Length: 226
Image 1 (spheres, rainbow, N blue to C red):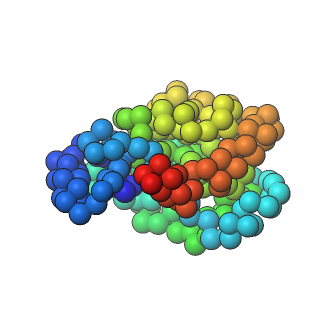
Image 2 (cartoon, rainbow, N blue to C red):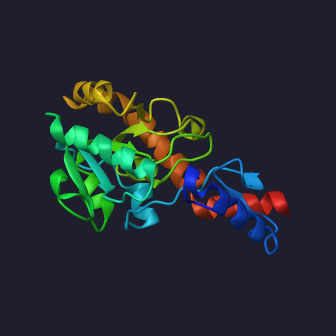
């Protein structure tokens, strides 16, 4: 089971890893067409809350508008494109709070976070910007973390999210440029879009917790295999 995005510069290495894994594993999957079995990744999130808490807790108090939890990692062109968008946002007058590790000095922000829930829960909106959006399989914790914190994700990524989650549970960022910034300003100016999406967010959370999580993913695999 491979979870990392299939960055172009890593494709040959990825193919080699798949070939090696097939010598020892009966089932090898990954979120790309190079995998012996292309498949969505199970939902793995980065909230430290217990499963019971995430499943049973209601909507937390929302009193802030928009946040982005990201990092300063710049190993690939994809990472650098994300940082380029961050720089555009930093130079705009969009009001958002930035969190994350190893961010460049020009970005500012509040630094690394421990439990993402504590950071994200007070916000209506969360920027969920994937490092990779070029195939139909890849979607990461960026989307799961936002929804589990009852945020409405403003998502930049591939079409996998549309196949896995109910309509209206997230918004699509149209582009990582001035057009995208204008869209963000319009949406995050008030909580109206979040209010309209509450029921869809609740439905998406149940899908993440009870259908897409790793244990359910493994259970379905065992049922199908045996």
